[in-house]
Length: 350
Image (tube, rainbow, N blue to C red; front, top):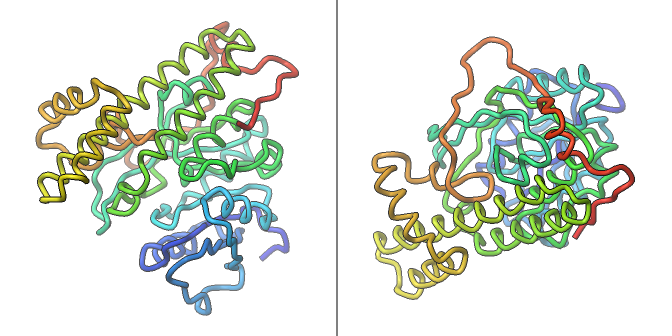
């Protein structure tokens, strides 16, 4: 192995257990082997046995609670020219690193690479597939596409240059970072499913109220920036993103209330979900009931979860076999020009 690897993989964990073991094994099984894996112990309850793993898997500890602190600690320890992130619940396809390194090596103008994914349940059963498509800063701001941190590979100098993850975000630091990255750089998007994103009881239930509020805070920062720069299409798109977040989380909360009723949970728990649903959007419960009728017979998990935590768009199935289609944001002429920041402007962190 080279003294300086091409890719540093940062994998924070705070639960541990079998999902973490599977995530690490998916890195060890990559066809691309010039990597280092940095496990960041963020006060985990279960510690993995690292003795059976190769030396290029190392563990560091970050005692400050929160995903952003752990991700920043892993980034600070990284030495590769590219950094990729993996949640402890998720799995990578065997060719994930190889395809992303090839894409970024061939596109020196692009600062990041994102892929498609498929959703799986706790037992690994596939529940849906989402393909990546070219996205600009304005697209993500308006919630017009897929964005997951475990799909991302980014140039380390760009990651450091934008300030890394903002630790004031407890549950949603990835959206804030993604918008800051795309504010300054374009990306390559691989129309290939290279991530298996796991949905289970812990990661779809914990702290969704705070997660939604943090998403709204992020959009507010970027909306104000677009207003100051007179980028009116981006500003309008940010308002669309706010509406999507509010409606999506409202429907999500109402769906949780419905499941709590079905499970015979206490009245207080049901009432809390209903209150959250109305607080996000007074019309959300009506939308959730309508969606339930439309989506009857579909997955009870995948349609209710998207990049914002809200309802997913119709699934785009990645092509089976063949070479992935790598593409950068399309040139949309004068419209695309509004997606780029004005010269000399700096984006506030919060």
